[in-house]
Length: 266
Image: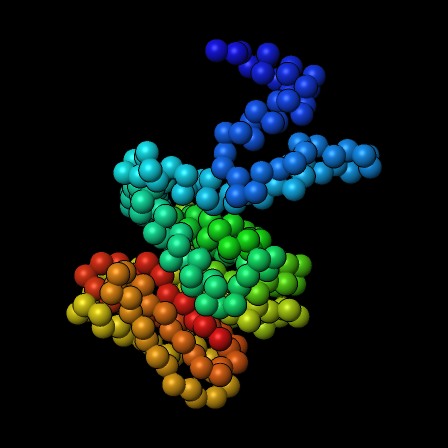
């Protein structure tokens, strides 16, 4: 087995050969025609003509041989919660989140701001962005509203993914009022906000309680709740023809399992 020094030395002495071999370790939808184009230094183009997807390589390509192996292990020192997601489970969660983002109009090249605590759903959101070609910008959960507003205006995201609260130093840090204020302060607020949360109480299967008191609306609209039979822990809430000032809904569990995700679709 080649040692680190030899490995590093070759990366400097034979850049194109080194990176051609490394690129062969992942899957490409379109093979690249040229490893490196440095005809206009200091600008360089790598893997010219190639097309790949980072989410596919992080998740999908492992399904056949390692689908039941652990892909994501979550341990919270704040809550004591621990969870393990296999590659199959991670694949399902990421696809679900990608569908939520696409339903909100997020597409290739769009920005998505992720303002969340350190929970598995934050990883699902980031991988989902990579899956559909969106660019994610992570903002530390709990940042002050003014700081969050600055980052919103810098990224000009199409959508934001957040949670009702996080934990820091053993204390609950509410997020919703910070998100509301940041959206009020921002010059370029996102047109859709998705919230991710859990519940300690459950309701009968395929039924959900929606508390609209947390949502500021310019006018009343009908709310349609759709629950996927394949994943009864996901609720998509469609607010038809709505201009959303604050789009963070409190949605209870729809089964005897914790709620994993819900979305507000403008």
